Amino acid sequence: MVKHKTKLTMVGICFFIVSISTAQVPIRLVAGQLIINDGSFVPRADKYLSLTDTLDKSIKINPSDTTSLLSRALLYVQFNNLRSEPNASSVVALKNLTIAKNMVEKAINLKMIDFNLKVLRAQVYKELCYRFSGDESWKFNAKQIAERKAQFNAYKMMANKYYDDLALLDKDNAYDYQKLKVNVNYPIQ
Image 1 (cartoon, rainbow, N blue to C red):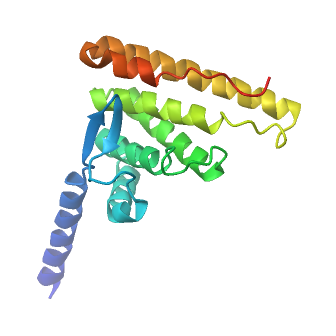
Image 2: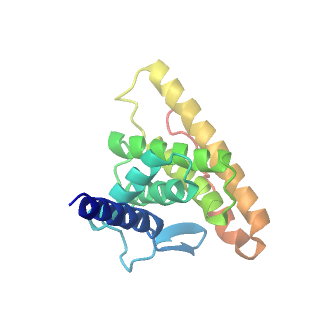
């Protein structure tokens, strides 16, 4: 009986490890942006619940797993981008994009060398700019507006820097990266 339980436990552990190692997001680089390549215009979060849970568990077990960090950050970005969450003032989308930014930066700090990670980093910062780009002067006081403007400008500077870097790294697609640069200014002066 004890041997049987041990074998079942080992099979369960092996199954969990295999599920983590095969948890890959089907991605494609299109016009300078990473997209989930599942055939849909806007990927649905509910379709990826099991993958999301697996990636979250993997990151909890091994916070230095750069592949899981990249995949999970991409899911955060895709489920909180302009097409999925068009309301620029969505607090939940901003929170999730901030989590994605932290995951991308952590993977970079862990020395992950992956071109897709560099593309995703620029994409995250551009999406963060969008979350601060609405004219919501009625919603914030002068101090909050100044803080939001500073945050927007910092994200804009980083997004544009990363798109310039990508244009140098991937000269064949430099035009796409230059088109993606943030050209708007913070709406409240």
